[in-house]
Image 1: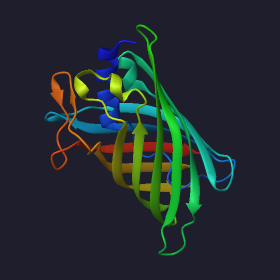
Image 2 (image 1 turned 120 degrees about the vertical axis):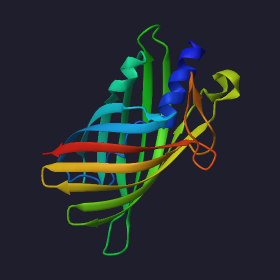
Image 3 (image 1 turned 90 degrees about the vertical axis):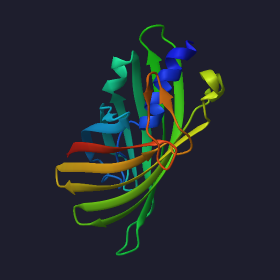
Length: 214
């Protein structure tokens, strides 16, 4: 495994947290959702576009499975795939927010030397829903089992992110927008670039998504 390559790649992806929270409220049983997402984490004085696509299916009234691919990672020489589930824990009821949790994993395969990395992840969402309108706050973390292999002591076991967003789920269409505070536990640097601080640590960015439901 080439540590330098994955140190740079891991810093980019872990700091960016890749995408908006794909599914906050589980889909109806048997319902499919196919979407594209774009993250815009700030790097230096500009923004880094992170583009991906996903598909999700409601496997029960309380659980939705999803899988996705990140196209931007291909430009860095890696195939990034993700799989996971979102499960309703407490249903939304009036002014009482609903709670859902997610779990899954991200995998990376180098197209140069076929080195492989694997990151389990888990998250928690609180949401309010009024018809097609959904407001949410979410917390998510990646786990890096090989954090100790990163150069210069910059690795870390957990890479958390926190977000607040709005989505419009109307019949066959869903639009998503989310603002994320990324990896606030430490300052990160990728080659020749610095991910700006959030109160001295981490980064931040706006994340967008559109999806079709059927």
